[in-house]
Image (cartoon, rainbow, N blue to C red; front, side):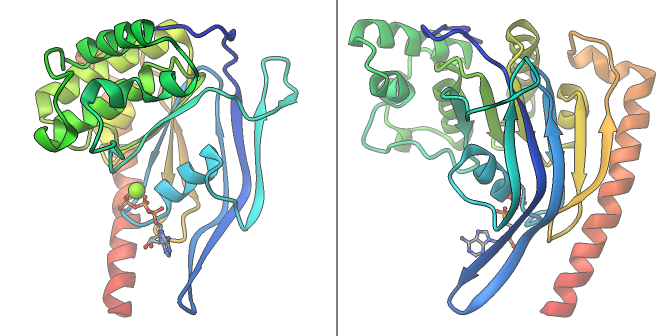
Length: 276
Ligand SMILES: Nc1ncnc2c1ncn2[C@@H]1O[C@H](COP(=O)(O)OP(=O)(O)OP(=O)(O)O)[C@@H](O)[C@H]1O
Ligand SMILES: [Mg+2]
């Protein structure tokens, strides 16, 4: 995946969420999405978040991105010197719903952020093409999002984030719409890219396999309101690849996370049955 550099030097911060709560209020009703959430996304590492549907994962990403203000708690960025720093300018997100501009071509979607940053057309086109090649979408530059499958749109979203060479990469189920093989290839590429560039990565996923394969730390969240049920360190050697799944420890991590998740999913189903 591209390590297309900007002119700013890279600063990969640690991100801390302390006592984060978020209450949605709409139409006279309220939903407590997050309740006293505490977690830490280590600099240059991949932190995965896994939890039952509706437990507040995307909400947490919106707060981290700065698009939503927590009702309570603090979000902070810690620089390499261990001191608080401002929100990094270069954060990129792959949204769960792709969020592509339907009226722009694939290439112009990928190049959008570069255009906003004032990069000349020739250079941004070259970078967009390189990013598209890396997500295996060469030849689709002039298509529109409506002409692509869900998996292809998701890869456009990934290319659009990577082309920015962000310091912080926030991924909301980035591989959810992909077929199993493409997913594995892109997971391996992401692992290699993170290893090479040391970006701070937050990966929201529903896949235990993906969390164990890619992450250094996995947070398992409770059913809504989301809080941390467990923090699991993944000590598999790097670089990770499909072969990592044959490591004897892999199955242990999988089972541990599955066990934690299962009880939360059952709890949330029970809660829904009572509410419904
Ligand atoms: N704008 C909103 N107004 C009111 N409630 C909302 C809003 N957005 C989300 N919610 C509720 O907050 C809770 C958390 O939503 P969120 O999208 O963060 O969950 P999630 O963990 O990302 O779910 P999924 O795994 O299905 O993507 C859900 O119960 C959802 O219905
Ligand atoms: Mg979500």
